[in-house]
Length: 184
Image (cartoon, rainbow, N blue to C red; front, side):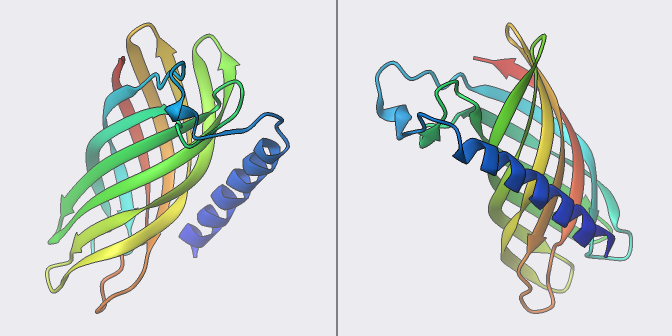
């Protein structure tokens, strides 16, 4: 029940940001195809805590990679949409998971290299609960803060992820992740 409330709160936050974005003038589609578009990519390692609905001991460590860039599919005139591609892994008490997540986020600069952002998450969760091994469709919401200064990239995310249920395997979870890496 607690996870559902978190999901609702994150979804509402994402919808309010999308509403703001939809009123922005000058949205461009497929700007990544233009020769002057700057992707401004970042690559980071991430680590944190994950709490899942699978297994007896629900809290576990999670680690992975975060690659993000200015979105090349749809963009505001001031490049506020960033696409995050994340790979996260956790393994505890007989439950192993690897998730591949895609998350376009609307971001707002707050000054001095900091920005905040939120958006939806779509992905695949490969889950082995000790009895079954399944690939599950995953969806959710994420909110985060990022810091960019020169080549330094750092950030933190709070993410809710739900999955479909197949053969008594599901992987509803939330995670808090810290990340550090480089800007290219």
